[in-house]
Length: 83
Image 1: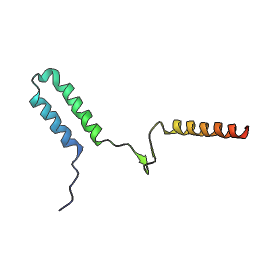
Image 2: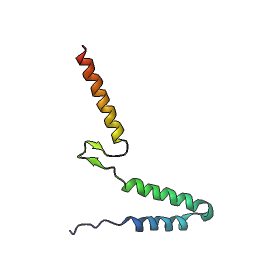
Image 3: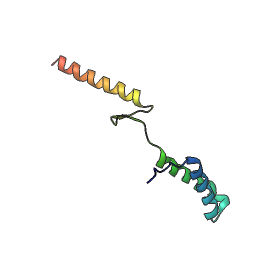
Image 4: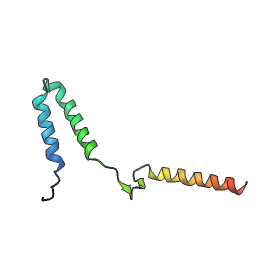
């Protein structure tokens, strides 16, 4: 079997937008809401967080988590030093 080619994101969004216009009973009121919901559904399905070897997720909160981790280990080491 030949390998399956990955579909681009743009045609999927276009199909969803066109589908929402055709199905909606009140297009003037529900089209923007339905379109937004469909785009968010596609985004949730296709988005994956970047991780490092499956150990931790790399995002904007990483520096804060690292500072918290270092502070916790320093407190534990100080407690053992003054035991």
